[in-house]
Length: 408
Image: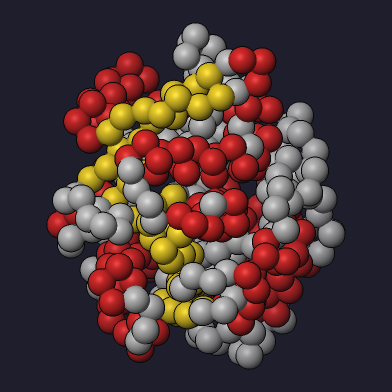
């Protein structure tokens, strides 16, 4: 679909359900930050913040908003500055990297709530959106009713160390104690064999992450056996390219646009932090896309130091197979805040806002309707809900391809 048609679709949604709020930039410039609101207006609406700094909100998540509205939620989503309908200033010039920071994006959310006359909201963020939600909460605590954090982030360097440790215990050492998941000793042995044979370390770490998160340990085991036998290399190469649009160049207009948010992704979130040279490190794959990205300047807000001051209920959803923001990060947040609740979701990877939308919606609805109490008791119910979300289909496709081709 052409950029013009995508823009037309996004602006149609904006005209029907949203508006803009004018925000200051440097040198006297201004940007109109777009937002949409779906569902019957309620005293406590829900702000949903998607993952990846470059992801748009208006066009990609219209299905999510409809699902949430049907279940009685009043949903607000803000088009991230530097992306989609918020990519250019009022003179039509694209924003610069210096215009796009986590702090400014958090303040944009506050300005939208002010524009709508919303005093407090439940703020639900996924992956990077969980980070942005927390920065918003720290900068505007009076506007937060509750936080719902899906696949949460906490700090660039601290999270990376936990990611490395978790991946290696689970999928290099094959430790059954590393996570509440299926045994991984066999697949860990296959990963070590491929590494010993000289498999590209960046590709190996990326393929393991994608297949494990989306399709699970059995599919990953079968694929690795096929690769060791000299088969399915074509599928390996295709998987290596998955996610590139989220990191490279222009991406896809009004859906994912990484170019203008590099000051956040690399400068503030540490996407370009150096590799430690050890197995299953996520950084070699990330560094392939760094190019001339800005250097990491440090976390914009020290969230670890702020956790003990979270006075609002904080509900944390963590996927069993999440290798990007593993359970250890979620547990650290829950144990550090004043009112933390962990909801483990089985048979699920990273970012449930994209892979298991009904689980996120039902958890948020529980928070809105009755608070965080007893939600953890219903984790099995949330897990068993029908899988909605575009990326939720990837696992089925991968499993089917691997199973069918392995038999032929």
